[in-house]
Length: 220
Image (cartoon, rainbow, N blue to C red):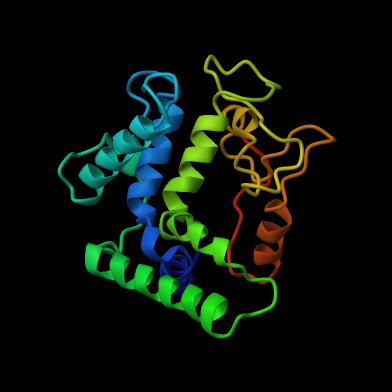
């Protein structure tokens, strides 16, 4: 991406992730560590080296915070070419901003369900608020827990990665973990004719709009 589009997507990501915003730099470092140490004790989020889903995500949170705050210095291979916008991350990734997003979500629910009584809304939808507050961790928990425990494998990656869905409508391709660990640079996470990664056409569209430039279409 150009510097303009890079900063645009930093802000765009913050708007859509809101209270569960994740630093692109810190996330990229953890993602590279996950691939390097997949399903070993050094994996930041493996379901096979934690007691349960919650301890896995707590471990991920602690490592994420250490990387975000520069409390640890990851290996150079994990930080190479990773962009950083430190001033924005300090603003976007702090508790006051997170709580502010949560308040906005709550007010919207109250307005939509109890005040405007929009069609299709029901009182039980308030139970969805915790998921809305923590959408980022919920997404990470589903991908890393299910994607390394449930499903089938096309490749022997010497780990426990799985393809959980044939058409990953739920996580938009992220649940093709077995394919992704075998072909980490491949833009289309689907590898077999019957698998569908719905994000791949979006990537191609962004390329045609010249928002991104793809160096390679297939894994080296």
